[in-house]
Image 1 (cartoon, each protein chain N blue to C red):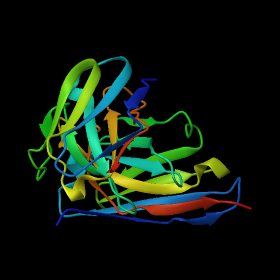
Image 2: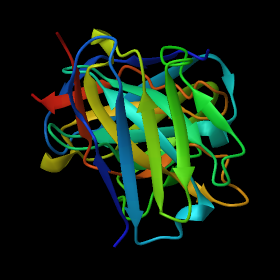
Image 3: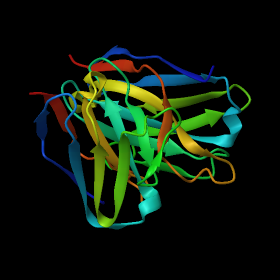
Image 4: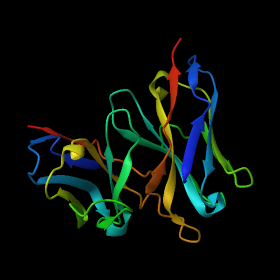
Length: 124
Length: 108
């Protein structure tokens, strides 16, 4: 079964840091780009960051650029989102999602497999 | 940044009716770079359509996508009870890979 499981969410104070992890199983992880999408309470979806299968390309939303860093470990089938200098507006459920196309066509960043999400709350 | 606008914000329909959802882009995008998702309360989004018109695996054929340039449409031909949800479009052709604000389809 294809599966993504997020971990690492929690409560953090403004200015603090948190590292989200996403573990993948059931598919050849190294062939797929991966993404993070967040959803603030009662709001819509916001794309956060994407990384290509070989980490050649990493994209960030302007709202997180310079504060968040996305990385992956293809040997461990995992992708991590390091979040620094967190703000109240970063409070959201963070979803890990797989891109729909596999290498070498891994530049299509639509998302066909999603995790259940990890909640991040930034509050003093 | 490509801004996506979805209309209407809410669509109130009865089961069996046809739903037509619009997604407009602030600049032209390739048809291959537009996706649609469905989200129900408390659940992760589910991919319905990618490349504007290609149904994802397991998606019933009552869901169809169309459009090009700046105007795209998701059509649900006969609403089933499980189709009442929020629908989002997303462009993935140019970073940032933006989502629209969503259309809620609720029961009339």
